[in-house]
Image (cartoon, rainbow, N blue to C red):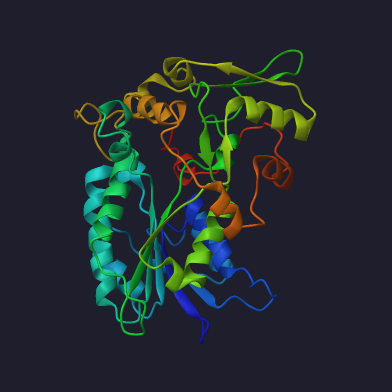
Length: 349
């Protein structure tokens, strides 16, 4: 690992979010000077394609995972900071709460570790007065850890640890997947975008912007200490989506409102019956994929999740809009399969 640089341990490094965070941490500073950070990645399989790509970028690989807490401690030794994103879709909310707390506690034991960043999601259950109609399980583990962290001190000094929460959301890049992407292309070339969002909106976050905000936190330790940064790139309704798509690509497009059941029909029925936590057995009584995503879409249909875009634009003045993201990425409405690691490993929706 490069001497003189601040080492950041990234947990969840080979996922879409982790890769974006690492790219941002390694990027030269605004003035062109080299990044002050070096990155260490905790990975279950250092021979994995994504892990090997990270190593070629100069990232140090540490074999381990969040359920192997000794490996977490080993990964943190000598590190200045940690960025922690646990996989809700694999371990589920109960394990996520437990390991989210334990990883923080371990970080407090490492005297070199000065700033700890938890990748969270909105506390949608609290924001809806605990209405079970909005209980999207993959949000709840992360936000419970965020709430617990608020009870912990955050001290900006050379001999203590400060913390921040980066509250994210659906990736704009998921427009490349069946989740947000076109349902079909008509014979006349019209791209059909369908969803149960109704007249609501999804506060999408482009992965490149997510990486920017993660870097911003480490660059601004004092200003972000004990803060939750609720981030997004744009406030996307589906009428706005199809208009922007046509403006950028010149292709005809339309929005066809769907029920949640119609949206789910694009996926395999047996897959929908599986628990949302992938490691749980089918039929164990826990929340299924279908149940989870019906409630997830309600959050956006009813505009439960808000963002302060004036603040976001001030902090990230060069950040994307939906239009600029489409232009920068060459978005064409085509679908891909390797954005999310679960998809690449054939485990995701």
